[in-house]
Amino acid sequence: MKKLVAFDLDNTLAASKQPLEPFMSEALADLLGVADVAVISGGDWPQFEKQVASRLPARANLDRLWLMPTTGTKLYTHHEGNWSPVYAELFDDATKQKIKDAFTASLDATGFKPEQTWGELVEDRGSQITFSALGQQAPLDAKEKWDPDFAKRAVIQVDLRQRLPGMSINMGGATSIDITREGVDKAYGLRKLADHSKFALDEFLFMGDAIFPGGNDYPAKTMGLDTVKVRDPHETASVIAGIVAWAK
Image (cartoon, rainbow, N blue to C red; front, side):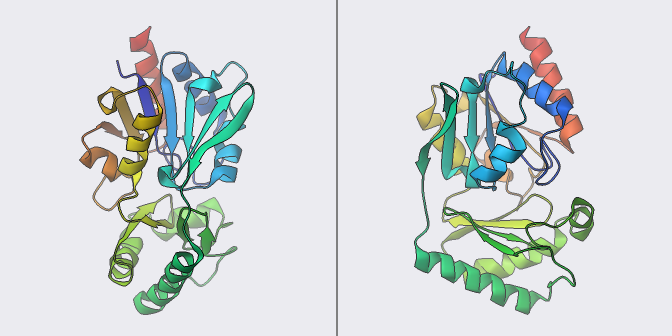
């Protein structure tokens, strides 16, 4: 029995940028009764609060929940009724601008500018810059149709790696590409979690939908963690149910 179960967020626990559905909220509450739980994803804290922290039932033991925005470059924990940051590792302004300029050049070079967008394409999350191909407020149905096999983003990713040596560039969610400092990926975040929690990495289990080369969940596998690749939140809930049943 693993002592900490870590999850990707979008398309693993919830649809892209959508709140947890009731079945997942209840599943996570059940899991928090038998293990610590971590969620690590590219979104910033406001997105985590909207999707996860505010959606769990009153019975959930939030003091066992570790929330890791921006690919683990931030960590939030819950004590005495409040969420508070443990750490945050931020880009300087010059680096942020360099990344934003690279996105503009890459979209021109690869030709993947969409005809319609909803909101800003590039979001500054402090410790991470995130490109959302259709914009930050794109509707879910449009996002799911744009790049379901990650093929478009793989081309952009290759181009960006030439323009931004020394950066980590990973695909996640339905339309996004996340850029962090070199060496910062989910493996980095999970190692930070091991440092700040009472658990060793061999006590972790990780679940995600993008556990494949180039996917932003893949570093969890390459670092040697036990992992479970899931198709969607419903499959995740089934795996959680099995863990809870086994623990009892």
